[in-house]
Length: 194
Image (cartoon, rainbow, N blue to C red; front, side, top):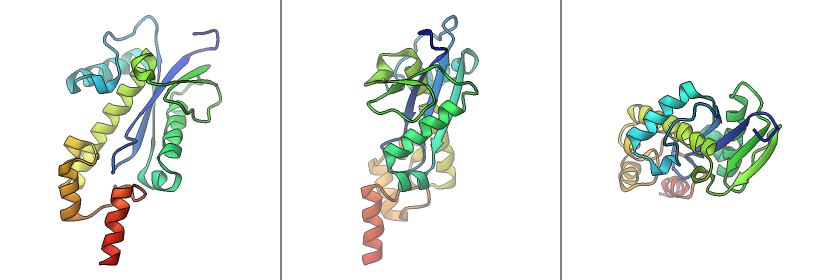
């Protein structure tokens, strides 16, 4: 607790994909009820991530924030990530006394802040935030795959995989694609110039 009130860990999912929102998770863990096996979401199998996500629903205070594609294009991905993180903290329903943020930049928050590079592998509350963010975003991308078939988002979560690239070549970008990202921008420019 650091004598500052509750400490939350914050992480994001979805900075690199070509489509979909960026999602942040903020988590205040209960020191008496920490799920066993918390780790960086990228190191966990999908079933393990899903199980920990469900355990965290009952064992922690959770906030989720997001920045939509239009906000990513307007602000750039860093600015949109900071916005999603601030929204996740606001969604906690209580103000933390201190926030531990994965990475080397911090959002504008009304509490003390600390950056932890590779924090999702070093800090349990940030690891919890990474699980909340990734599972939330992966589920959303699976749902979007039903609305926008042909890109494989249920498998690639909007990353620029060969399957996604083939879908773009066949179908062109849609409203969920980040127009400010170079591969999408180039596709749009070539369509205009042809």
